[in-house]
Length: 462
Image 1 (cartoon, helix red, strand yellow):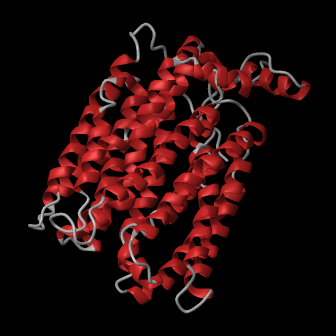
Image 2 (cartoon, rainbow, N blue to C red):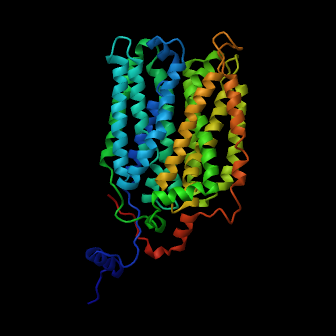
Image 3 (cartoon, one colour):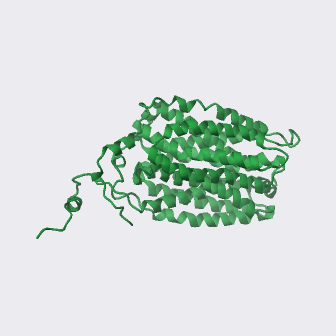
């Protein structure tokens, strides 16, 4: 009687039993979505903590009895400057210990930093301790890279070339989503200065709950999802040599760092940009949320299209000039007539054009430098963006008019002009990336070269 056993399945089972695989086996697992959600939650917590105080800077200043909002700006800036310090051990942990170790470390730092902030707001004295609050921000800044640098590593391990951009978009853009939550929730929690300590407490409770799933993610898939994921990556020393000689990586590093830096600085200063013109903290919070939510919605639409078309360079060359135009428009949209339509429209377009470039740049760079380790490229890119963000905040705060200077007093028009001028300087860079023949998508080429016979479907569930 003929056997009903599938010969191919029998070969795979036998190969597994004896310790070798006769032919390559590639499989996507549904459990990858659980790990992605856990990574998204970590990034939401990290960014929420970063922008907890941006939209309520005047309340924070009054609560701690500060003479100006400059120290409040350092609550955001200190995280940005701490980020590159945390990126170095993050790259090592991802390379040597994997995604789960990185996410657990991030969760531990975020939870500890959040509760130190509670001590700085409630426990040290009736008026709190600004120094303890800053220390909590530093701890959060050290833990943030272990979550934000991880999406490229995670998508390379768990996803195919047909879904990496979309998965990276979900993980990377959850970071600005956390910022949007912070921009909206903080003004709602803090309607008067005395409510500030309780807002820090509730934020810490929520952060602790959202960090729990990170402790239960799988370390790696049983089988790679596609041929490129199975290829060995270069050691760190060789990866560094390859990156410093790759002009396309250097160009994207400059573009990515400048655009992420300005998003970080503008998001942190948005209340101070709008307040001199008579806008409320609620108006500033909504404007920051529009900036972020519009970017997330547009990315949700564009990322699946990019996964199918792989038109990375074309999008870069279109959207970077759009972003620069938006920064120029920001100089003119802040007016004393309190019209919100202009700021909201410009912020929406700016967010849509900026955020959709995040996963695109992170994934396209890896296509160009493969087989360089993805955790190294993402760590370098994010470190550059956060470091420049901190520098831009310091510069823009220094350019701010004094309380009795400018029209209206205390406005940040000079800061916005600086922002627009520096952004305009990067417009030529995407046009210097190279010719079509030079811009090879290496991982995609590897995956397309393999036959579909090596792929096992349907997806295996948990």
